[in-house]
Image 1 (tube, rainbow, N blue to C red):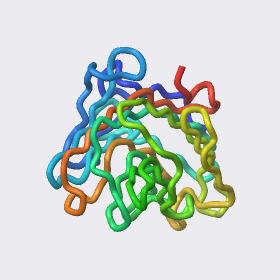
Image 2: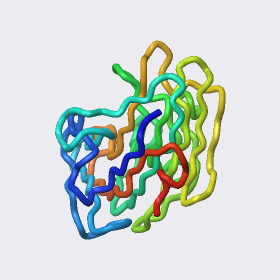
Image 3: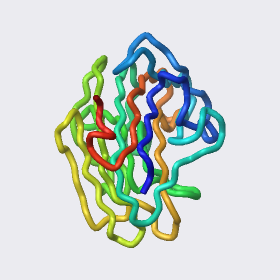
Image 4: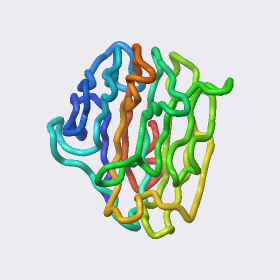
Length: 220
């Protein structure tokens, strides 16, 4: 069982690592916050593809927290869309993923799309049944996410996804870990196809928490 972890940004990038951040390291700011006095600004411009933090570590390039077969946890975080170039089929635009070790796409991911009149939060990955519209997302407002999940590559995984306290999606008997891989880990930020959807995307992240219960992972 993993310990409780507070990955807010009051102490900079403590409890995150930037080993696989991509094009831009998120900046700790104080302009728009969910709680406390600081959050992280994640901004991509032009054709940049990625600015992602990995849960764990002390702001450097190591310390990833890994979820192995059978681990059952709650992970919560908040995000606020300031400006967004939305994804669509053929151009992913992830803000959170449970990424398996090795290469390839995650089996569980949350993305921002605007497709067929449905703009907001979409699912991504085999465990979530592919790309599906979940809920609209308003710009300039904090969105509180909590994911309860069991990591598995043997078909015994599950997840429950809560948005602003409401259960919006759940599945069981799924592979959160890609079969043949050993573990998953949390990534937060923006991961997009910059060549397909170039421009400026700007979100704030805050209140990242890991725990064994809802109370430990949810916003206070």
